[in-house]
Amino acid sequence: MSFSIGSILPPGAAIPLPAPSGAAKGSGNFQSALSDAIGRVEQFQQNSQEAVGKFLSGEDQEVHHVALAAQQAELSFDLFLQVRNKVVSAYQEVMLMQM
Image 1: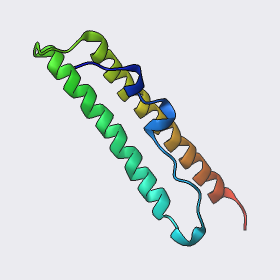
Image 2 (image 1 turned 180 degrees about the horizontal axis):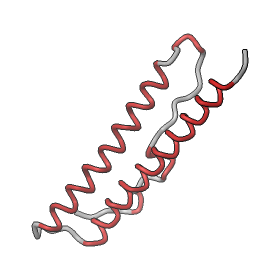
Image 3 (image 1 turned 90 degrees about the horizontal axis):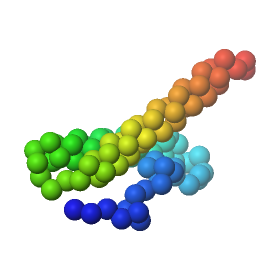
Image 4 (image 1 turned 60 degrees about the vertical axis):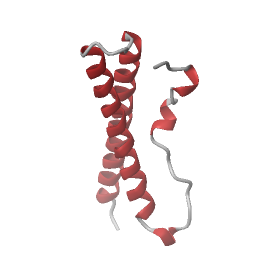
């Protein structure tokens, strides 16, 4: 199995943000974006675990591919965690506003 530079997704591609639309759809966009992001992070984690498993079992897996998969999983999780922190912070700020 070989990777090319084109197959590595940039950090912004790990969690796509939906295009802003009218308020008619409500929280459906946020919910679907959140579930898509969670799914992608889980997929990167599974890919990383699979690559490590193949490497440890002696299959044809190169060390740098395992390291790339692990780094991609770590970066996608860190990005998701930072987005979550920003959302929680924004929510807390809105809740502190006086009406």
